[in-house]
Structures are given as structure tokens and as C-alpha cells.
Length: 340
Length: 221
Image 1: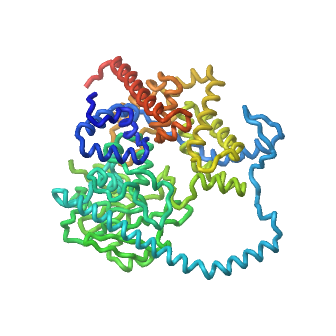
Image 2: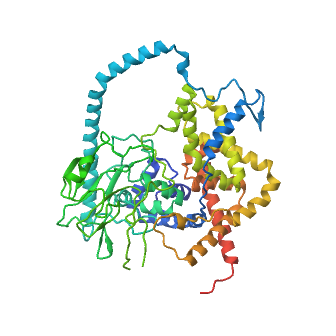
Image 3: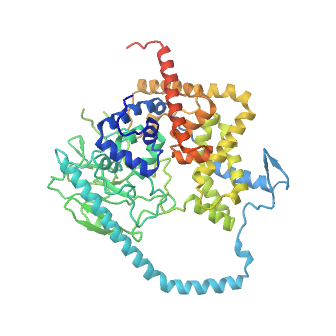
């Protein structure tokens, strides 16, 4: 394998392809690879080493009650004799598993008085704090969207037909968050990390965005995880089907269409966390450069074409050029696709 | 090639979608559990890692029952040692270190049984799901899927030719998508050693696989 002059070992480059290096190292190699065709070629060569592994991945499904039976197992183990042995572990009753509540340590009356006083004070303070926080987050969110929008515009004007980044019809690159990966490839990504609205806290924020090459080299499990997180909590236009052909919109289009916005997808099935600005509003960037702060409950009244649904009220690619729809990072333009 | 498409209504959150948005971190859950001993905090951790850790153990041990047993033993151990979890440390590598040790202990204890069951499982997996079936929009033909599954099975056989520590390393680096720094913490070896071992392991796997590929009879076209 050829060596170039930057002294990066193959071991390190393989780590880069596995996304196993530190964030700074990943970024450094991204930058160097963009400037050095030889280094880029070495990365492509090493990708081949991961091909067999990609073919071998199996998906296993735990039984539905594994978590609950594990909790029961622990409860039973701890409830047993003081000196019960589990392999090399000695389970001790001195370490209680779960305590029902610490409040039993307090007198009920004391607790209630303290609670009531706290509620009164908080009722005065919370609204003003929350309004200030929401307002600050909203401003930062607008700023983020502006930066990403600018990068998308630059990307489009670098394209022959002035189109937004391509989402594949099928395969691993068929999801809305691929915009972030394409921007990264083009060296236009305004942030080095994932794109999260400041209104949402996220522990995954330190993860870098991979290039197409690194993404395709990743295991299907990693690809699937990235699919959900790489576009952050923003939604991107899912493109249009025009005369049976799928395209992403062109910035030359006479139609004004939503380019991106806050994602309004309920994150957890049992929680409504989708509405991220005060739970009922979102920022949307349109192709004319306007960023509109919309009340989600009034979205159908405000827009003839709901930016988050296509004409068939689905979160999928639009029907024709006049129908646009924003989808969250993981969303494919076609779910599922049927081919004739 | 023009493709005619047909839209279908979209369902709920796709399987496997485990959002980390607006949720406490693992470390926050541990801290909260240490403070309150509230079962729901611990249960959240178990649920959060249910699929990921089970998949790791299932692949590592090659058997459903063993994977479940080690999964439960791992979380029992987590509970028993949780007071030793140092502030500032990250939970995921700590959990994997415990699970890995439990898995290795289990394999050593059941080595004789394991030797036969692993070989069987590596070829006749109880899972029919392939990458192609799990990636949305994939439209492989039945022939392509069959070939894909067959190739996958052969790679898994090649994997079994590697030593257990090498398989373990590949599991962590490739299948679990772990950072080298986390692997170094789990295996208690220097970062540079992880880098070189992973590289050597994957190169060796390729050599075995290519050797197996060469020995396959040529396919008719």
C-alpha cells in the first residue's frame, strides 16, 4: 500500500473509517483527505478491508421481557440469603436494591409545607425564566438555521442544476439527514458536530458528522444509528417526484419551498417531545431565505401546503414541484418503496 | 433508470429508534440512582442497553440463552458495584467491561459445550434478518439476498477462525461502533495497542476470508 508524506499510519486511517478516533482526529483526517488525493486514495483502499465485515452483520432481537425479567432477576438475587453466591459475586443485603422512596424519612407535614412554599416561589419565577430561555434558544436556533441554510445554498450553487444535496431513492443514503453528510463532503458544513437546536438538550452532541466514504464504510448498525442522529433535530426537504422521477429541489425553482426547519417528529412514542420551542412552535427556512417562526397548532391555517406533510398528508417526498415536505433525519423519501 | 414509486402511509417510530434527545445521560441516571435508589432509574439503564448489549452478547457468545443469562448477570454486577462507579467516568465502557468479563468467564466455564454450539450457530444463525432486509429501501432480488446471506455466513465462519480476544476486539470496534479510547478502557490496554490490534485483526480476517473465497468452487454464470 502506498505511503504518502503525511505520516498517518494505516492503523489510524482504519480507525478513521471505523469512526473510532477522537473527534479532533476525525476532523483532522477529514481536512487532510480533502487536500491530499493520495491520502484519500489510501482511505478508499482501506475501505475494502471492512467489506467482508459489512456482509456478515446479523440483527438480533432480544425477547420482549428481557428488561423486566432482568429487574426481577436482580430483585430476586438481592432478596435471597445475605451470603448467596452468584458466580464470583457475593450479594449483600447491606446494599439495598431499590428503595421505594426517600420521602419516608421526612415527616409528611414538613414535606408538604416545604413543597407548598417552593411551589409559590417557583410560580413567580419560572415563567419569566422560561420565557427568557426560550427566547435565547430561539435566537440561537435561527442563527444555526441561517448558517446551515447558507451552506445548503452554497452547495446548490456548486451543482450544475443548482439542486440541494441528493437523497438516494434507496439504500444506505436514503434519508433526510444525508444533507449533513453531503455538506461535510463538500467542505461546507458550518459546524464540526451534529446539528442540534439549542432548545433540545442532547448527550450525543459530541459526535462528528462522517463523510460519505466513512458513512458507507461503517457497519449497518452504526449506519442506522447515524441515520437518526446525523441530521440532528432538524428536518430537511425530502424532495419531489416529478413525472415519476425523484429529484431534490433546485434553488432556481420559481416556487418558494421549505428547505429545512426544526424537526417536529415525536421523539418517543410515550412522550410528546416533538415540539421543541415551547412545545408548540418551530423555525422553518424557506428557499427565498425567509425564516418563519410558526405555531404548530396553526400550521394548517397558516400554510396552503403544510411544510411537514406532502399533499397526501404523508411525511414523504412531494407530488410534483409544488408539493414539499420536511422530514426528520431518519426519514426516507419513500417508505417503503414499491417498484413496478 | 426511472423508477415508478408508490407512496404508503408512514407508521410510527421505526424499530430500533432509541432517541437520546431530552433524556438524562447514563451518568446522570447512575448518579440519580446512587442518590435515590429509585428502581426506575436503574430500569431505564437496563432498557436503554437492552438491544445493544444483548446484540453484543448474542454475537459474542453465539447462543440466545447464554446471551440472556450473561445480560442479566451483567446488570446484577452493575447493581452490586454501582457504588464503585467513579464520578467523571463514562458508563458505557464500564458496562461493556463488565459484560465482556462476564462473557469471557461464561465462555471459559462452558468451553466444551461452546466449541460445538458456536460452530453450529455461526453457520445456522437463528436470525434470518440480513443487512439488506433491515436497510429501508433495499430492493435485492431473492437470488441476491441468498448470495448475501451465504457470503455473510462464510464471513462469520472466517471470524470464528480468529482467536477469542481478536473476535472480541472486532466486535467492539466494528459491530458495536466503539471509539478506540473506550475499547482501551474496556480492555485495559493502551490506545496505540488497540489501534494496531484492530488493524491486524481486520487484516487477518480478510486473509482468512480471501483464502476461503479462493477455495470456493467457481460459480456458474
